[in-house]
Length: 217
Image 1 (tube, rainbow, N blue to C red):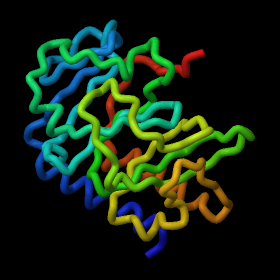
Image 2 (image 1 turned 90 degrees about the horizontal axis):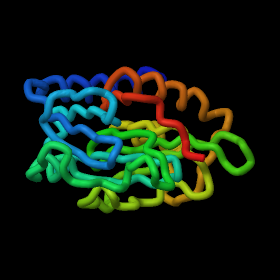
Image 3 (image 1 turned 90 degrees about the vertical axis):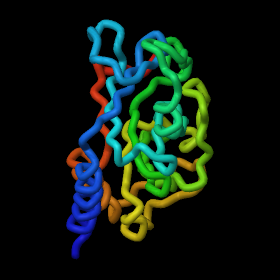
Image 4 (image 1 turned 60 degrees about the vertical axis):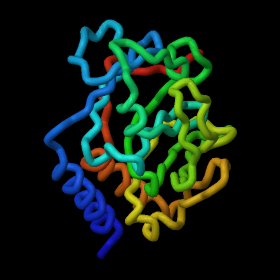
């Protein structure tokens, strides 16, 4: 089985597992003023930043919600704990993703704690770099305004991809457990392209941004 087929099969298996428990969908809404609410109807887009749907497959203590920022930080939370809070409409002030902070929120995704986060970034030399980081043993924070863990240092991430843990052996060449920017060599390009394609198709939660988030100046 070639790389593309292996990756496609892993994502397909995850999608089928998620779909099997898709009767109930939990909703979390992030607002521009840095607040959050749960299980409310979609509001007018004027003050909504993200509408996030969390499938029941991820409603457990082994799942993780990742808030990925363009400064290389990732705030790791547990959807189960967040959804069990008594969130009121526009409650729980969350400075971590306010529009006037130093870092811009680029991605919100949900995955299993044993999965991998692939980060594509630009280094100081302007070149592209890629690395896969294991989420296992990453500290989970209780607040959305936490600075989060440093996943990439001295680089500007521009894309974040979630990879099922079953692909650990396949992505082994790009796995890196340090905060270095990683590397992108010619022999990695086929792997990268396959990951990008399947990420858009299946497992990753895709919150719908109300507006295009531009890096702050």
